[in-house]
Length: 261
Image (tube, rainbow, N blue to C red):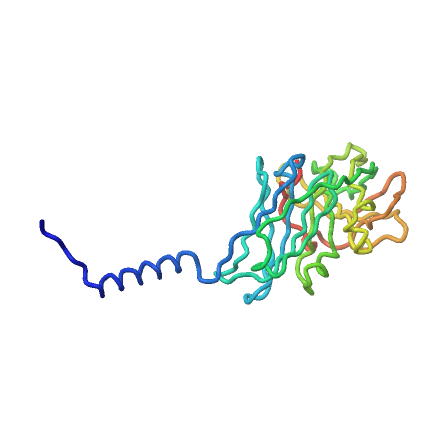
């Protein structure tokens, strides 16, 4: 029977090309993703995650897109084929206290974490919107967002967009009055540990398009934070909101989100 021999040099070249191809496909310094495992009582489409990676690439922040019927989320731990050295995560889910954790160095840590849901009780909030005549004819809803000003120090960054989580949406009645159940962040351990360096932002958005109508500022809350509604143990029986002097286009706000249903 006739046999064919492959020269040793050819085998060496072939193996070298195969090794190079595999390394190029994986990335020389890439690391496995980090898995965030969710508790069974949490709806994955309502989970909001913000994270920050550091490494030879500098710093890189991002968020995870909420998706239904998931029991975990993955965070890529490489940027431009360079392995991250540290990971910091902030996670919010309705009905649960905010979760934060840090992983460093990633190379020596387990590539996943189980998240638990510590109960965060609600509080009833009553408000009334007083809009100028020019804005009254536009059907709108109020979007309420938790502004985590403390996240800059947690992520160890000096500037950038404020980390935020949409916590509620509500449509006011014809008089502008609205009633909504909000998370009681006075009972949130993370918020309290950061000396309540957080607030609630109220914004009117068009019902049809989600476009911003105006930001809303509370006008009858004493010792309030100029950045929004301060986290307080108690509010007036009805908080009055009016548009602030500045234009909503100058605010830290984007298109309508889909985080809350």
